[in-house]
Length: 268
Image (cartoon, rainbow, N blue to C red; front, side, top):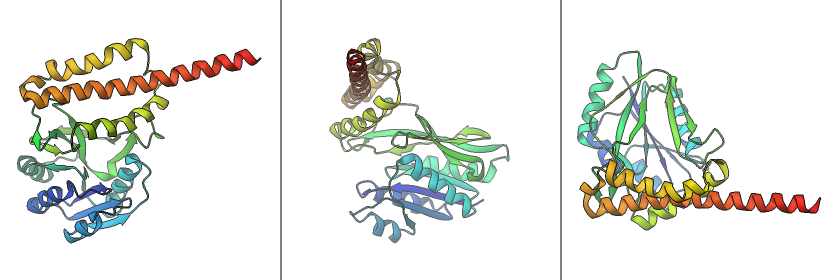
């Protein structure tokens, strides 16, 4: 069974070295594809030096980039495709599970769920956002990529879907997503802007007041984020802030639409 690995990149040198080292050390893949959208920090050269076939594609959102990669793995004859972000890599136990899975997966199974573990300040969070399962290992001919807020929501998180059975794998998909909490808040502010326009359910008074507190309690209490110590507290508060950003900007959109509607009615 051939395994193709696909990675989307844009100025990814902060995390790409550890990702490439993990892939090289595991040595399970037959092809390594990188689709880059204009890196200027040495990402392209570094990926090529580690055996990746690099393709350029203008950025149109993660949905479009990931869909392109999955389609490419399919067209190049990959039996299985492992779709990674440039800040994600399987730990040794997950690589072992992937190797066993590829050798033994029955025809009815078309995908495997990987548990992604968030890293903050170089240390993994063992409780906050756990478990966070993502479908990332799939049979390309039976899978596709869609947007989490609809087909046209290219700036919102992507989802891989498959038409067969899926199974969970042991091990962790390490996820070094943010430099720090400021980076986390600034990145998610961009997502919040998009969702404010796309999801009319957000921004209600009840959600604006209650959802941030609920997000904090989910991570800190239900997920037992307090066992992650101060980092768990900070990330639980960050999740609350991210939720607040989403509903705050949506509430503003609601207000502006109401004002515009009132102005139009007043001029009639």
